[in-house]
Length: 293
Image 1 (tube, rainbow, N blue to C red):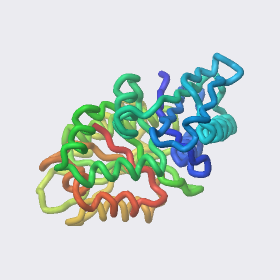
Image 2: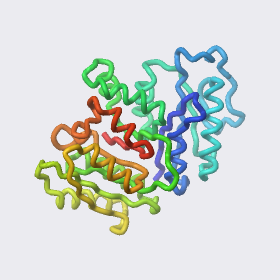
Image 3: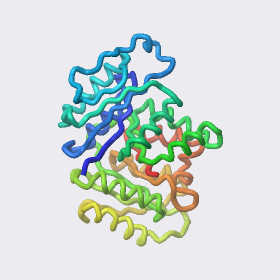
Image 4: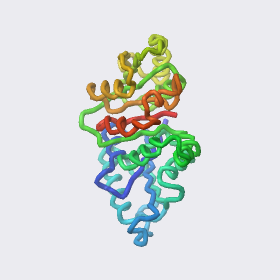
């Protein structure tokens, strides 16, 4: 089944970390579709120099005007994807003017496109981080509520060569099970990666055996064999620190968590929606963070 990713592309063609991550993570793109999304800032210095000319081949799916910076970034993105066995007819390029703020525009596009994941590069991640750091403010609440976060968000710093596999923070909640389901779906035919189910013991008294059983069944539904599934427990009052430390030491490419979990949500416990958001995102300097609604 085709997997469709919305990949944000900024004017900064030297920092295409979202594109670089998917190029490094996937073995093949034969069943993937990529939509490259560039949003022209309202205050962009080169807005008056927009290149109205489309790409030479209409089947490449480019819509909207391209600024000078966007053109260079999109060309480099297509080149990187091309080297990763991504054929041109599997790519769509969209360029749109900023309307509601860049993050809100990205999430609106995600909600309308039925994407399997939103892939945010470094710059988009910083803007998203700003929103989550102020959860009580009206603007941040509007971004989260209006978008409904209908697709998983992948926050991708610059990838480090040699990293692979995904660790999932599991607590048995519906949110964490959705994260397990998402990872299983994404990795169903990417057998170069294993999945580690990590339960952090922090005195909550949860049944780790039952959590692992439920999670493993979901992975089996996506045809992941037992040899690709590992189960680990760790003790730590700081769930965020425990998971990221484990992932960093073990060389994981990605951490997956649910947006809603036991005890107000695993992200609440990880302080992702609070004042330490900056610390968590910056701590995982080489690890992609998958946040699953």
